[in-house]
Image (cartoon, rainbow, N blue to C red; front, side, top):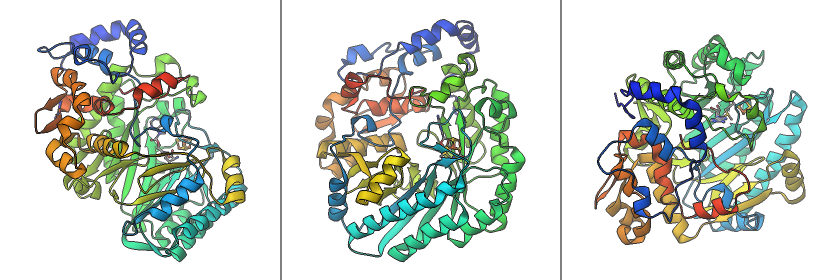
Length: 509
Ligand SMILES: C[S@@+](CC[C@H](N)C(=O)[O-])C[C@H]1O[C@@H](n2cnc3c(N)ncnc32)[C@H](O)[C@@H]1O
Ligand code: SF4
């Protein structure tokens, strides 16, 4: 079992708890990694292992989650539908497509939520929204020219896709089948919020009929008190009932979403209870996300009392508990926050290095062009990013008037593409073989990343990575700061910081 941050330091932890208030103040003053910091500035100690307190002081800073690179704050409104179409036209024919449908509706607002959602109980909103999705899909199909393109992945995300009546799911899938060649090996996945719903079984039956083969269930935490705090009520029996039914009809592959660092999660034993209930239900894959507290984007998060939110060291303890628990129960840690069982294709992809990271999390379909449909959806086509309008009104109007709803994006330079590839490798594999990476990108790694490599000195000194001429490898202790390590290769952080009027990123711990 990895003891990631040396939590044997119980005396130290007691001191930290006693001095919680002043510590939080200090952490709030911490600044992100500055690309142009000299290696001397990065260096605190060369021989002694940092205490947990020092580690947090130094590394708990605002930072991207790198579901894209360059990150969204740097994307430009000047990149629009014409660039998107031109990228679709130029995109190499041999690559399959990954289709993402964003269904924004949710019946009730979970107070922790950082996703793009529209809260409504009005189910009549489904039909016009799906109409808009189909108009957008028709325009994409037209731009692709060559009809019947291979499709290796279809993903319904949200919001809550099971807000839609089953007929609307069928309507979308029918249009996909009519115009794309869904490969026999395609992953067809949907995110669902398990809840009491008389239509649930009919919805699941439709998924089976329509060929879905992976179901991702939002769980977050099974504890009643925490559910009350986060305004999300979902009993263990409800979640289990849904899984039992999915299994009964032959839908065997499912993921769980959990979150660590949620308000009220300040008891390790209580958290372990959620972890135990999770493995009892045997999901093939578990995402255990770090709670992103971004009240400037989602003001409802202000409803949490400061005292309810776990301190950074409590968060580290929760994360360490999750890693220890899942890895001793047959799961493998993938990237920064996912776990997969031995038979899951994500684990196979980790072993053969074909794993990929995008705004859906970790994916096994690295070679596919991603076509995002729906409000706020992101596409990655021909090596460039495009994002749709972020309100349902703007999205629907744009689609009805022009067929597409692109409102910003980013055209990657050759350097961006190389850095994106490197950051993805760090976020997925936590190690980089310099020679192999350099050969793949046709660069000499050491001279290309000469300045960036200097920023790693502090991480080496703190025992968070090992670094030599052949490559870098993040140590178990460094698993906590993978985002910080990736930040060393992000050339836009200074620009983002300079232009930001509000905070931009959640904190890295
Ligand atoms: C679109 S939701 C999943 C489907 C469905 N809406 C639900 O909640 O069950 C995607 C996932 O994002 C994660 N998430 C949402 N807000 C978050 C936040 N502030 N920090 C970390 N993870 C978050 C949750 O684990 C959630 O299950
Ligand atoms: S967590 Fe899921 S169900 Fe809750 S508001 Fe966010 S998207 Fe909707």
